[in-house]
Length: 259
Ligand SMILES: Nc1ncnc2c1ncn2[C@@H]1O[C@H](COP(=O)(O)OP(=O)(O)O)[C@@H](O)[C@H]1O
Ligand SMILES: [Mg+2]
Image (cartoon, rainbow, N blue to C red; front, side, top):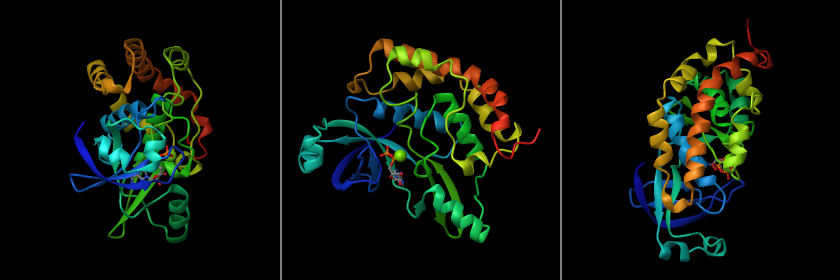
């Protein structure tokens, strides 16, 4: 993943994890989550890479290097003992809003997304890596640009059944066969198995070596153990194989599913 350096802290961002908006030397503004004691940064890093591999729209991402001097400029970062070094960031998508606002706008104006396949596609990814909070409207973004609307998936912190996973919890979660929670608008985008096919086939075609490469490129400073690396790879490879069955056996739970 690309690396850029933070040059200015613009303060805390919306959301529960207290990410910061950081201006970087490439001229972009990033929403940066902090590597620390939980696995939030690891989940973001792996979740984003695999979403891109699956052909799903995610904001551009980079590893943002925060210097000790930059951390020291922020009372919040100092208080939270943010470690200087690399942290995962996504380029801020301008003119974007959450899925509830999109639902309201699209019902009022009949506006449509230019990438509607990404909605059922997000369900495939979420049930592959077990992202447990994609039912939240604010973990989806819709960008308005020149009268067109583009969907983005956002926030992988609660992948792997949550950012406090361990080798043991991951081993158990790997076999889960129920669906993770889904936002009602996303559920209503499913019109039978065919809605999943494109993303599902992409996920099924991601090779073991690509998965291993993604997991092994997690920055070592984030403190993932060799055992956890191994479990993460096993989890992803196991669930890649289970995913089709999990989605097919739960098709009836999607409101618009047609048989
Ligand atoms: N790349 C981005 N572009 C635009 N808005 C963003 C971006 N990243 C985050 N946000 C906004 O910040 C909020 C919090 O980010 P998110 O990744 O969901 O973190 P949290 O784990 O705190 O919920 C999102 O709901 C969204 O409104
Ligand atoms: Mg969020």
